[in-house]
Length: 551
Image (cartoon, rainbow, N blue to C red; front, top):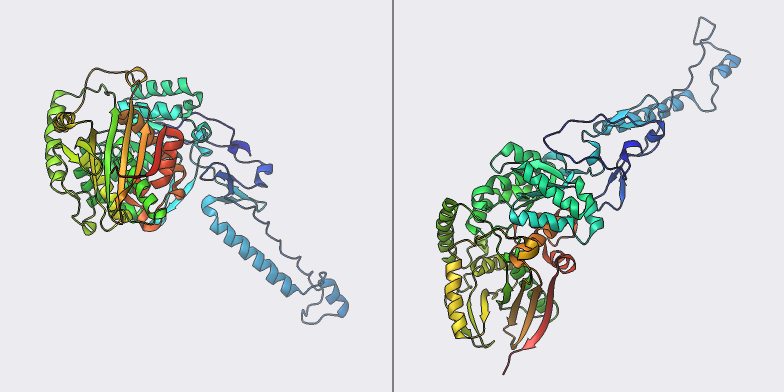
């Protein structure tokens, strides 16, 4: 239909050039059809306008009677003055009803267009350029706010190390049919870096030439609002979030834009929850923090074990143990300035001290049970599984994320979770304990690396072990594996899959109603649909089996 055909491709939209284009009005053939907009899954068309009936003209008036006295008329004249078989009153009533119906339809659709001289509906052309017309979808929210969400995914901070990996994964995504129907934008402070990144994406997939480039500063509210008001889901790679994330979250909540980040800075997340939770629920917005390797593997692994125990074994779990069995990861090569490293050391140390003081620090206050033990700090021998263990660097954060999921999804009245590293003997456990404590105080940085060569031979394996008080000698084990760098490559893939779910498959997510919105963990916001996408596209396996303890 003229300018509305799906096959047409136009240049990408940039917020720096928001000039409205004059779109030609539809011709007579177009007026006879209905305007079609894309539905949420881009596979079904939904009619937004219906053809409007032409108004019925008034019946012809009776000719003037030649006699002066209009009350007197002959039978012959009366016959000539009433040509229709029905009475004139009925015809006038019918015409009035049709005119009233046509007027009400015109008033009801006046916001969508105008009525032509022939009575047909002429839709108003959208104030977007032709590039985004094929992706337009009107989304209505409370308080009668209407946003045209024509951008599906915005990768904020895309020129950073993890953001770049996410863009390259998106360009080479296995589900090319889905990605080709996504309107993607990359945002950041350096246009030159973003242009270079888009060229890298085009080299992988020519369709990435449609990716929009948006300039945005994390501290400029006006610039952020211009992006989030047009976006369904924003993926934030610009950290540390304590410094750069607060206004981005606020803008997303205000403009009904779903939000995903990689934050492990739980004190900052708790601050955001206190300020924006009520508004996020009211505006039907999901905010998902800690959506990277830390803490998605732990969160989804425990969710899988609990679901198996409840649905298959019909038992309630009492305890889950997370074991990092193997991990070989790369180094990002990001070298922050010395002043930034020093400040981050101080901030991270204070937040670790605050968080370690409360094992259920991340739980909602009214759902705290105080059952979970303190974080392990030394090498410990686990008698039931006959293994030496040591503290995991990310264990304090991962365990609190899992405990928040447990409180929101009701894993069980006696449920607890602890996360440690598996070791071969006492000596390796002792050494691992000291290394874990030191690494939690600082940041890895080194020489710049190429992800295509620097992450070769990387892999990971983690085991989640669950038990029930009714069967003390039986265990349910979820083994999670991947043959890639977990901290950067897998993290970038996880973030992209989360964004696709929130922007295109929102209705398939587990929670509904008011519980669906606000601040969430990966398990509570995305659940099993997220796990299945990681299995299908990101190269992660989740294998569940039932075992018995060695005698």
